[in-house]
Image 1 (tube, one colour):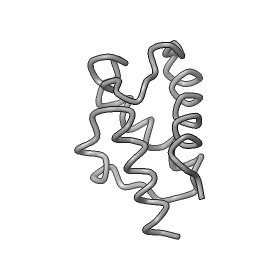
Image 2: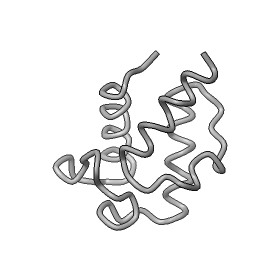
Image 3: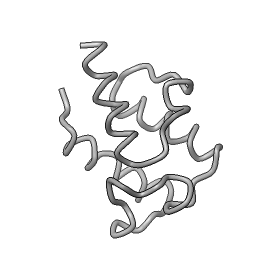
Image 4: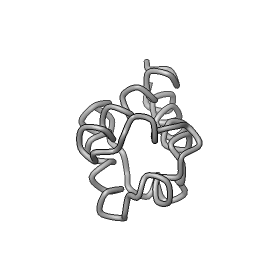
Length: 84
């Protein structure tokens, strides 16, 4: 199972590689929509990439309340526990 730091590293890699976000902009408190400038289409793409990386089925509805990088980490950690 992945811990928060491992999930943060994975998420940082995804954000850099697929969304061209600078590493220094990716912090746990960064807002996905305001600080990282993601839109709703990007959010769906992010869920798809996270699903590929984790091997877990991630429902877009599970991410409706996600606003920050830490929210994504928390949601993935919760998913890993629930499906473990």
